[in-house]
Length: 330
Image 1 (cartoon, rainbow, N blue to C red):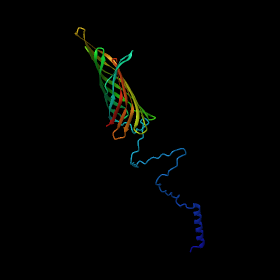
Image 2: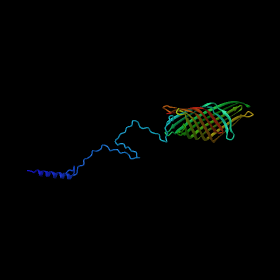
Image 3: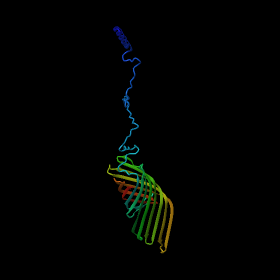
Image 4: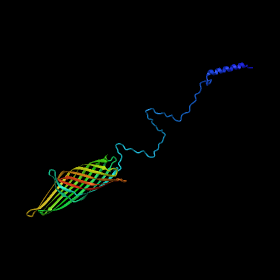
């Protein structure tokens, strides 16, 4: 039989041992560390003062755009003008109503007698190609032909004179891109080569005598020009002025023949011819109004006044008159 005093002493001994180990301490070692649950995504941190956060897209993300973002023009390439000519082939057809006149010209004595020829139409055609950078290559052909017949009384009886003039020009030029705008103004320069064929003929007859004089020229030389236009806002209308000049070097051939009747009634004939290297100076200007039509294919109409003057073999030839031009791309 266990005595009560013995049981009480055993319980007191066990309680003292438990207090010596400390609360919550297992009898055989330190407490186990329980794992924490993993986070679904890293916790974002705020950027330090003065720094801008950089967003890095996920590598597996897919981005879809309904339309591509618009491309901004570079500083070297200004935004296209609504009425500007697009790149590609184009043709220009022109006709001018002129009445040429000629006069003899001497470098020291100046202009001499003037002869007015009949009115005529001077056609001109241009085939061109405009590049992406705005410059254009032009091939232009122009032609004019006229003559005049004159009957003048003289002391030797009826006098008849016929003057003819025929000229053709062929130009190959490079036209620069438009520079500007400065207050809606645009500037273009051109540089190239001009070739020309010129023919002048004079025949005079009166009682018992007559003479003929034929002159031919074929040459080529540099050609330079400048075009200035001023757009009237966004109406498609623009004022323009154009000037070009060329110096041609080539061969001039002249043949002269005459006949007359001697006092005894016998005829006499004379003739002469020569060929020399001569120069010719050709100057041309335009002033007018243009209208560009907003259409699927580029279309422009020009009207104005043109003037042309050139000097060759002691002869000054002028023609002034209105012109109309149509330029269309295809």
